[in-house]
Length: 236
Image (tube, rainbow, N blue to C red; front, side, top):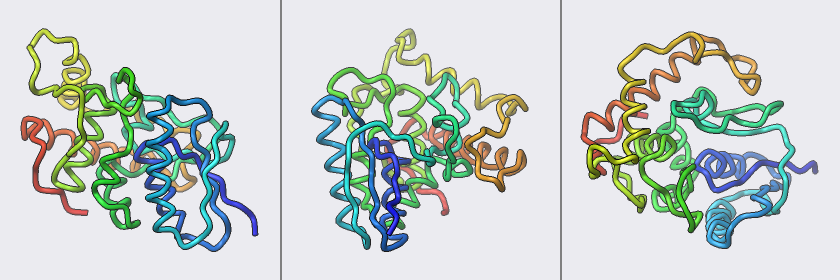
């Protein structure tokens, strides 16, 4: 049987997608982890892999190296580079989560059998210092993650290094926080809704806009609660 090969970096999108695909067929599933990462990150990736493997209905193996396959899952705000910016999926791949929000990805993880503590152990941060499993709590990726976990679980138990709602007004950690708030106060621009080359074939500008607006709703709900770590999860 042909192997299915997917990226597995420890971020919520790749972990949830792996969990979904781990039950999708009988052929082997090969997950490609980062080639060169700090020991802490490597241990976390193996821990998350074990959670996926324990719920799989097909053979699942973890390898480390460069991923050159054709799938790069990333929720809509990450894929559209939510200001001040996130890395887009590699060119030439298909993004199965382009029309999903961060909250929807976490809900899909729950439906795939991943419990809340496992989802909380995923790694989103783009700015944290060593150890590489630390999460700063104030970059765009951390804030979107926080909004997604609140939407899906009603709580976010991630041990962030700092709290963007509990720092001095002049603190540099507020930079992304304020940039996102400014972005939420204005309408989406057409230039932000260009369909990526990684989009599924049935993607339209209208569907992309609807997904992005839903992601903005998740962020607004988080800001409306003052960053409270607990809130009512939104409907699936």
